[in-house]
Image (tube, rainbow, N blue to C red; front, side, top):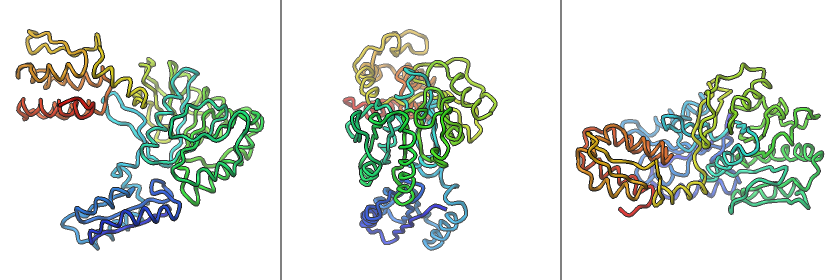
Length: 428
């Protein structure tokens, strides 16, 4: 069973959130970890500060007495350890990508192991880096283990070790004691034959640290085949239980079988997903999964949910920070060329071309009501945003507006343009 902290605020005190933060800091634990989940109950509007810092926040129903609500929640905790509530915990998920309908596909933010595989230049490192970015955005503490010293850095990552000197295990654990440290452990200073033994010692120390502090929340291994080779003498060097680990590998078949057996989700990047996931299936003695016929576009991956027994799904990759900045300029002020939106109207009598978002908003303000509703009710706006701009989140928001047929044209126009200008910081 998980260890749980239950906080209740029925008197509306604003100091409860601060007391929880102080207690977690004193315990050197984090509320965003399966080992310690902060559960709070609030009954008043001024309890929002308490609910915001909790992993599982519960608001009391108006008709339910406070004491009865607490009893009901505790009974659920005892019964299934919050498993039934996981879908209701908004922070408790890690985004893998968007499906063909534009819906977010997620896994729990704790418990699963993810394998990201593909040849050099396939985009697997960029995909894994995006997962790392999203974990950091959710205030999780990651630890990257980098056998070759080629993992890309960002300004908030701290690198320990170099090609001249490998770090000691004690140095790594000391650095991770500070919850704000996002660590990259560079092992390139160790000879390849020494790295598996070193990582056996390191993982033992990390598991002890997790047991007492719940951190680091996630471990990313950049090149799992170097630490746990399939043909090597792995023996007791393989962790018996990983948990919250992202494994990167060029060929899954090169990774030790005891490690592959712990993978819950396998993600194939690059032009040959059938070969990549076929290696996983062969190693696990599973039937080869049915895959889409084509590899898809460059910003797509194939995800196989092994533990859940689901068929592989094609996912569109959320753009990383650098990619978002590049797209932002192109979408707002660039020239989309053949991807431009063209206002034609119901009879094709118009030919108004919007080659970027700025021009789109200008034209949308002036286009006549008949043409506006024609494109709106046909879902043309959300389709353009999803297929050309590749912005699934905005497309979902716009699609919701498109389906509100009762809205007057002026209201739908105001809401849709407001969603665009807010997301891309355009002048209203």
